[in-house]
Image 1 (cartoon, each protein chain N blue to C red):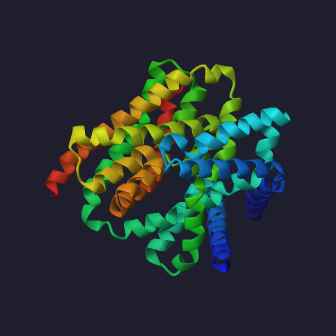
Image 2 (image 1 turned 60 degrees about the horizontal axis):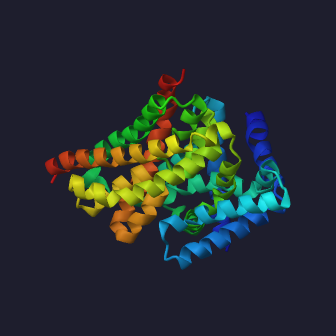
Image 3 (image 1 turned 30 degrees about the vertical axis):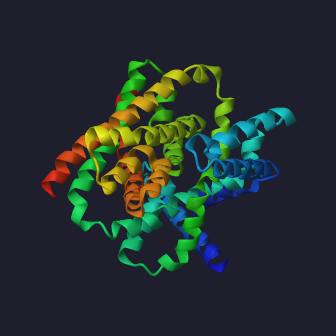
Length: 116
Length: 244
């Protein structure tokens, strides 16, 4: 329990660092993403924070779908101008995902043959 | 400097947390029911907790006549947690990056090209279908894992609720089609299958990859995390060319 709370606190501090840096330097990236990159950099040089973060991060990621519940519910309240376009939107999403998977497959076939 | 910290970061975050009230219980109850149905179904993707929880909550809100804005504000704590959850992605990502070196070159090529293709192909089709810019900005981050994607779409001015649905549809479509695509393109190596799942179908694809093997899941984690960073870098530049 103590580790979980300390872990969340570390995550929040890195989020603030990210938002602070984004606001101060005028970087066009979400602050929490910058915070994630900072933490990634710290962890790749020094792993001493890792034992404190493992429990908080695995719990948050495990139940991450919970965090999308309110925002996804909002989809039922979208304006008819947008919901009317849902068939087109679904076609776009399905086709572009399929093409991207196929394209990645082709690239991987090419580049992985060279390196064995 | 201290000003920026207080007015732009601490106060808005505190406001988000402070609006939390009883509607957060609706969110929790909906999710618990969704999770229960999903587990009972043997983790079948059409019964993803979000697919169950969100229509139930919608019906409940209609029934008690609570408008969406009040429900959303009342779930403030849950929305606020998206920030720390995004940062938390660094932990599995750093663990996977450690074991990478040998495949660095092919992996980066596949990742950079694949991530770019997944987004640009969607933006191009939005234009071809003549949909408006609000929709374009909302779909732009659809192959990125939701916590990152939501921040990104807020930044570029899209509709986060539309993005959330688009991300879910993308993830589900990705795992349904993946096996066929792997057969057609003859990608048999589990590591590459994992990477494709992570880049094109984010967290839903990653969960699926872990069902194949831990190695497959590890590569999906990498693909998802790195594509999140990569897309965030090129997207703000790319959308400019697609907007009228």
